[in-house]
Length: 380
Image (tube, rainbow, N blue to C red; front, top):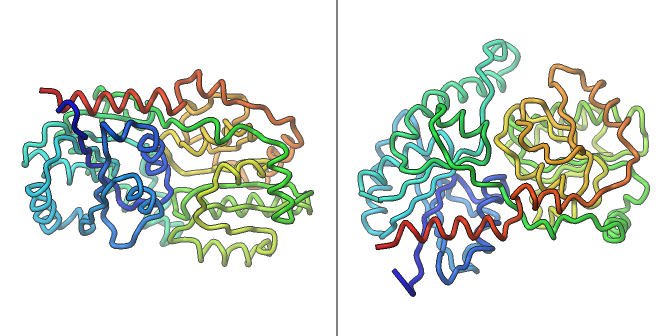
């Protein structure tokens, strides 16, 4: 294969600005695309936020029907037809417990390198939740299905990758796996006081205490609790504002909740943004009380930016590269979280980029490792 470009098929649900998607885009931007090109297989008809950029870099985006875990035969048939007409030696799946579906058909088509990549670690089933609300009942049902499906993922994979220890141990049931860092371009997140002041001024937020969150509006991210915490902060510090970066199926519900709590006028819903590094510059505190995660790239970005972070203790402490991150229990009240946050401000913001680099999370070296891994699969 010397002198020719190899193509790797990356498998996602949709190419929006989620953690796994942002991670692979960081790698895609930094590999030598004269040697390795990425194509993408997605499972939604709508275009994702990254698709224009992918196509501008020479990548192709292909679409499959949604995966129905109870009736997958239609999906199997469509994917089988696709793989028979495309010559891939490497398929790299990022859809967690659902990875068994594409990897099974990849094995049937004798694709020699089949990678399952773990990005999340679910917490244990909590049957008390089924009585709390319809939303939580649905979440527990989905979780039950995922716990069942994960038992098959490693059966069809030749290589197991994970963003962190907790995620890998959960998805692969203690089998050996390779850590692939959620690496970032640290230069984009280095604190810049003058830039932050300029952004604040442009957004009429000069003197505000800014609490921020970046994430999809989904049950996993716990936005209802974020609003409850912000309400408590707002009652104690009138000159405060909440910034949400992201979009998703629960956005309308979250906007309604903000109105119900009478904080809507102090909440900015910025939607999906391409300037996340700039948004992190203006925030004072980063709030991240997820029910579950893997090793969130967002928290690596926020630490690089020198932000004070308050995250749920369900998130692995592997991500604590600095002393700027505090883990709090979701069993604690919103009032408790608010008081802890307000104790932390004001503070002198630090440049943590060298710490992040030394931990192995700078994209340049990480991208070279992944590039070489892919190239080895085509040798001979």
